[in-house]
Length: 89
Image (tube, rainbow, N blue to C red; front, side, top):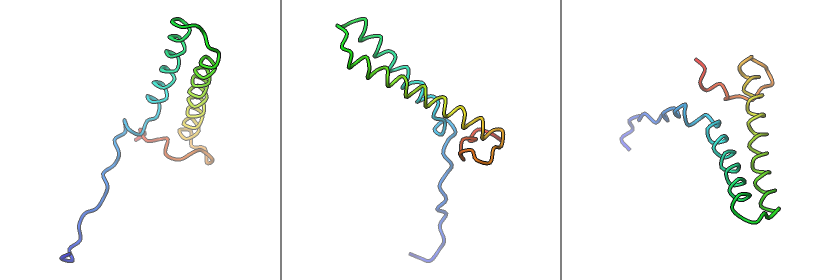
């Protein structure tokens, strides 16, 4: 080390990587397509149907929770989760 200070700031994460909505939507869509493919193309095994339905339900509940938390952040609620206003200026 020469004793000189170096700039070690981490660059900000791009906004499109901070938004969880595309991944939640894609995951829910994938579970929906898996359910439809399974029901239409094979003999119905209830375990697989339940698994796909739970995947769809988790995606739906996650979307609802995210939407409610984001709405609370955008209206300025003190108890809202922090960091969901990444695309606000």
